[in-house]
Length: 225
Image (tube, rainbow, N blue to C red; front, side):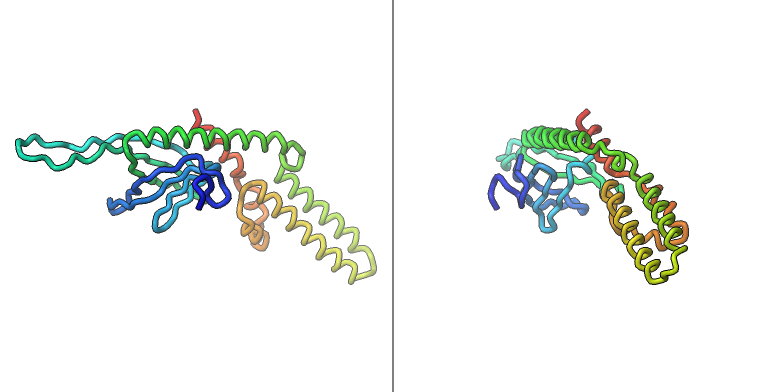
């Protein structure tokens, strides 16, 4: 792996660290901040999208040195502890604690803030591009496509060709699913939600799905305030 690349992403910061496991044990790791992620190269690598990080806290620990006239053992170095609060795809919060040498914590936080600010700028740039009516009204786009499909099928139903009706019906259903899938992608949701249409009144649940693209903006805004 090159020092300035992690997979295909540019590495903005790299340091040695220790990840604190749930059983209070520590594990030596390499910690990266890339253009889009915080990456912890442990036995089970952790890759956290910048858009999912809510807060980053730094605490300092100074090892206690008991007074004694005897020969002292080497004093352990001062440490910075980074605590990352982030959420997963289901909006469940998680906490990750990382130990670094004194001073590295501030460098990590500075690099993380810079990376998030860059991601924020890219986010606003993408918003500036997405100005068409369909991208601003995703639910209405799905509703209107469904109405258009039903109107077309109603017109075809009056024709005498039954085979033509079923051909048009199949094409309309495929088109409706394509539009619904596009809307899910715009909302930053999984395509598995398409199966909700097979449930009675599932389309109501589909229209109530939260647009998570806006949550990315709110997360970035909260961290950089």
